Length: 422
Ligand code: UDP
Image (cartoon, helix red, strand yellow):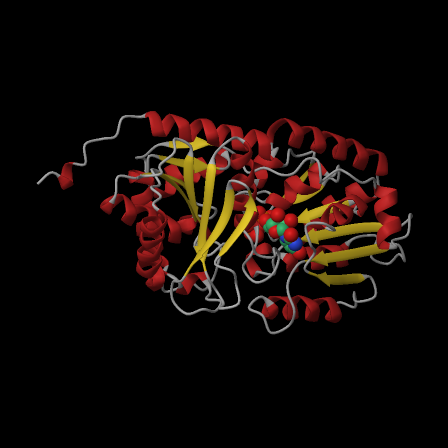
């Protein structure tokens, strides 16, 4: 018997394991997105299976998060961490094991939601062999990213071709901001169906602690001026811009300034090179007295860090969405962000924070100083940010929109698979 249910979905996230610790190596926004979307969909009555690549023998193959929501790890290539640019060749094995899993468990997925271009290729191949519908979220567009980095990887042309094909063939593409939608249309293809549904955040957890209590817990002085970064250590995140801007800040001579750079893993991991580089700049600029690199921050402690900060800085060279900005805003902390991508959508300039041109050290320094020198305005910006997140970016709201989209797609009459009629 076929156990297809009406509300069943496979979320495919080959390189972004939704069950893994966030903030180190390559684990960031995509992992958080898939996990939260999956759990919120399960809450809405969907049966959710999240498929990812297994990276070690010790990892469990199946993790049950909630009654109807689990992570399933499939073997594809070596059982070790492989950087995302090197994964493409292992995808046929991933597909093979995905099909075997379905067969063995007597499950049919009529709908897959793929994440990042690697998974989009998996979805497109599945569509060629099965009657399956595909929703896709890019999380990052090669056409934009390659404009912002110096070393273009070998896989670039493959990626650009796949990103074009999926836009033109998936039942629906989810753009997470109007800016991403624009980029798809101007840089990838004018064909294909796009819906705009943003990323979300946990508005109960972020915003659950006040600044004073947070500072007490982290042993940060009440009078301190706290500048916070949260995120992966990756050059495109622009941490160097932040460090140099804080050096230029008019508060950098005072005893009160604190710069906290959260994220990254222990030395020896793939993100260690950027962490070492940043630490070296901090030392060279004589900032080690007031700069703290606490390493990866767990999702449990993060609300406390955001709440303790006067300002959270997101200095990315390019950012398709940027969960950190809405997490800080949900915590009533204003954001100074690069005037790029999704950050132009989430951060409202002069209302919930300030936007500055990417890599512009002087502009970041001025923006940070404007907020640090005016605590009343800081609080106003913070309040407006909280409101904006409540209205637009709660996971429940986002999952509702996705659920409606999936339902609509499943109800659309299946097109005759012209190529299969022989
Ligand atoms: N994050 C975390 N701990 C850390 C650093 C980052 O939990 O030490 C989380 C952060 O809270 C956010 C995600 O990683 O949810 C980063 O997402 P974002 O979209 O800002 O950036 P990406 O990693 O996708 O480039």
